[in-house]
Image (cartoon, rainbow, N blue to C red; front, side, top):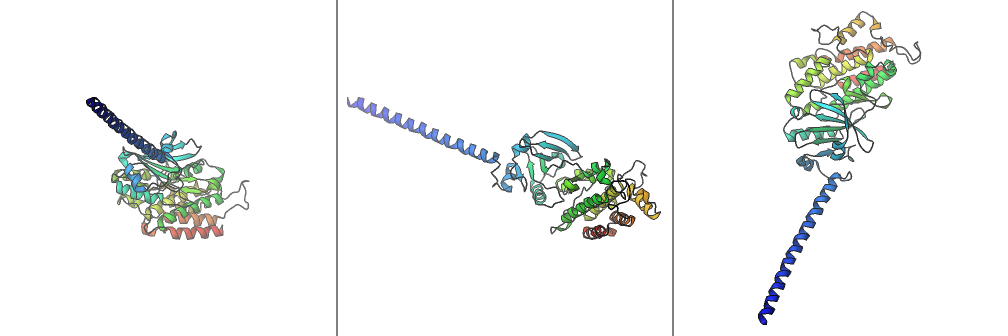
Amino acid sequence: MEKTHMIILIVALSSSFVLFVILFLICVCRRKVPAGNESWDKEANPEFKEIGVEEMDMKGDYIRFEGGEDLTCFDILDAPGEVIGKSSYGTLYRANLLSDLVLLLRFLRPACTIEKVQDLMHVVQLLGSVRHPNLVPLCGFYSGSRGEKLMVHPFYRRGNLAQFIRDENDGSHKWEIIYRISMGIVKGLDYLHTSAQKPIIHGNLKSKNIFLGRNHQPFVSDFGIHLLLNPAASQEMLEDANVEGYKAPELTKTKDSSTATDIYSLGVILLELITGKEPISGKANPNQDLYLPTLIRNAILEHRMSALYHHDVLRDDNGGSGSSCVSEDIVIKFVKLALACCSPSPSHRPDIKQICKKLEEIGRKS
C-alpha cells in the first residue's frame, strides 16, 4: 500500500514538474513575440522619431531629416512612382503616397555611389542639414541591403527652369521674373558657398536642376550629389555637363569641381534666362567651349541688342513700352555680370558675394 502511495506521489510530482516546464516555455515565447512586434510597430509608426542616425546606419534603413519626420521607409518604398528623369548615375521618380503627399525620389545606382559607409553617411548628414528658401531640402535617405540608395525631396509641380525657358512661357519674357529667379538662384548658391566653415560645392549646376515654386521662386537641387558618387560616376557627370554647355573650361585638366566652376555654371544659367537660348546650339562651332557667351559678347560689342531681346525682355504684356519695361543699360549690366561669371580664367570670375552685391545694385536701378 505504501508503495502504491509512493508511486502516485512520484507520478504527481513528475506531472507537476512537466506542466511547470511547459507553462514556463509558453510564457517565455509569449514575452518574445510581443517584444518583436512592438519593435516592428515602432519602426513602422510615423510617430517613432527617436531612432538615431548611427542605429539607422547599422540597420541599413531610412534616415529622417527636417520635413521628413512623418515618413517611414514603408511609405517611400510602397509608393507608386513615375519616372520623370534619368541621368548617368540615377533616376528621378514622382512618388504618390497614400496620404496624397507627392515626393521627388532620386534613386542612385549602387554601381555609381561610394562604397565606404562612413564617408557616405558623413555626406548624407551634411546634405540633410542644409536648409534655405532657395535650396531643395533632403528630407530623407534610404540605404538598402543591396546597395541601393534613395534620396527623398519635396516635389515641385511647376517643373524646372529649363522647361520654363524653353516653353517660352509669358513669365520668361518679363524682366521682373527673370530678375527674381536669378536673385533666388544666387542666394541659394551663396548659402552653399559661405554658410559653413567649408563651402559646399554644387558640382552640377544647370537649369534642369532648378525647380520653380509659387511666384517663380527657384529651388536649386542636386547640390553635393557628386560627393556621393565614385570617381568614375563623377567624371561621367562632368562629361554630361560638358555636352550641355555648363562645364567650366578648367575641368578639362582638373577633375575637381570648385566654387569657381559653380560660378561658371551660374553665368551660363543667367545667360539662358536673359536670352532664352540653350547653352549649346546646333550651329555652334565644335571647337568652341560655349556658344552662348560668344553670341552675347558679340551682341554687346557690336551694339546689336536685338540678339538679347528675341523674346521681348524689354516689352510689357501689351507688346509696347510700359511701366514693366527695363532699360537697355540694365540688361547690358546683367549680361556683363553673366559673362564675367563665364570668364575662361577662374581667377577672373567674381565670387558669389560679389555677384550678390552686383545683382542687388542692378535690381535697385531697374
